[in-house]
Length: 187
Image (cartoon, rainbow, N blue to C red; front, side):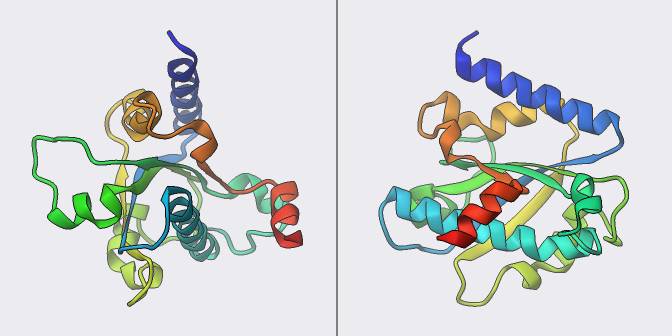
């Protein structure tokens, strides 16, 4: 097993640990409108949108997400760049042509106790307008409950890493550590 497969397998084990503790697992997908710039510029814009969606969701999950006592109750998201691949079901023309098909996907773990009235997948469907702004960069955000084995979900979510079109350095990991938040605020 090469290094990348070993790390991806470890992420699968990590998800299993959370699911065994009663957390809910989701496969997350972020599709974007046409963005400007080179690949690194596109990824920076996409990362900013994922962070905005996460921040918008946080207070709907935990009353005071910045309080240290709630740190262990924050959703965990690990998001990876992706490019479309041939599938049995047809992809929309927009999904494969906008930004040359580049989008973000990954997985989210949500605590068993949350302020959300519905599961995350239903929440995104019912409240898409909270996350997708008219004229904004984000076109669609979806969450699909993890029903297959978590290791398969991680393998699919990180397929760009195994195909070497993305690296672990491209991952968006949320929540940020306090040091990362301070570093970003200092910029």
